[in-house]
Image (cartoon, rainbow, N blue to C red; front, side, top):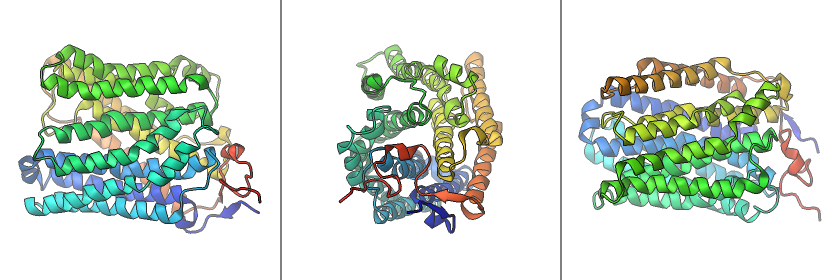
Amino acid sequence: MDVSTERKPHWAAGSYIDLVIAAVVMQILFFVATFWVGTSGTGFYNDNLREVQYVLRMQLALGWMMCIIAGISFSVLPLIYDVQGFEKSLMRVYVGMNVTGQIAIAAAIMSNDSSLFNSFATVGITLLCASIISLMSPSMTIFRSKSSNGDTVGPFSYALGAFLPFLGLITTLSWILRDEHSGILDFSEGLVYDFFMPLALTALIISHINRRLEWEIISSKNTSRVFAIYAVLLLLALISKPLHERGDVSVRITAILQFLPYVYIFIMLNPKKIISKIRQGNPYNKMVLSSTFWLPFIGTAAYYETMAYVETTDAMMSYYRWILIFGVAFQVLWGFTSYLHEDHKKTPMQTRKTQWFTFSAINLGTIITIYAMIASYLKGEAIESYPRIAIGLYALAYLSLLVYWIKETFICLYTWHKIPMFYDQYLAYPEQGSGFKED
């Protein structure tokens, strides 16, 4: 059986392509909704500040960001564990609900009407959560196969999928019960951004470096321990906020708990060894590896904001989450996916080109953002908006990614392979694909 096929329309290229296209399109929709909030919808935004913030942030995290995570999972995990791939029909159900949910949220925000907003936002949140709950069956298939080939990444590879149904259920209930329980939206948002996303992004970093590059920055026998300690530290950071608001934990202890998870995982990722491997000239994805060095800045920003050394307005996202999204998530998600795409094209690792413009724009934007935060601390002045130059650089980086993926999916002259290079080593029957059993 010939596993290589000529690239035709993008829907024939593989499931990750469909999910990446969905993420690209929905990212445009997210930016449109955000732009509307900042221009035509400022009055409505200020009148419904907390609810609009929440649905926008869920549209970001559980929308296009989760689409990329799901796309990577659909493409890689069945190969790693040599099990049947996620069904095509399930992928379509996931994409349909996720995209429709994001559209509903955008419509809710731009409706400029409180009644319509509540109705459409509820539909949108429900669909987003239902889409990730729908992944329960394949996630449990991976979880039950965890003892086979996932040792180099350990629970970072298989544990998060089992958590998705709970994440979807908690998010839905938090939105429904927001009027009965004050602070429940903050807890739900923290569960997504301060627990799940850091774990998921770290899992992709470790997967790229430990599994794909085979650098073993974390010993295989230590991945379970590192995962457990990191997860506990993130949970402690999460619950410390409501405990501090009740007066049970001091502000300094809370700030330290916000700082610890990111410093811990940065140390565990062994930056000294990463730098050594880079100096040796080993090939790697620059966006994924550069994101690693922003991790301690997330913790530092969280510490300074908790201590009120740096303050932002209620209308802004906190600086540490801003760095998490643009400095880390943006690079990890798009960098990992582009490297996987090169694997499907079977491009030799030594000849792969770096998207220098995207890479430079993202990291320069993050440097400017951190500089603005430091300047605010030194001057003792509250921050009222993010640096426009940084926002402009992020926008340019996204536009370059948009051009890249349009070129790769609609204007392509290369051969695409069903089984990507490197991952075929996990398959008992590479030509037949994952999950094939001989009669």
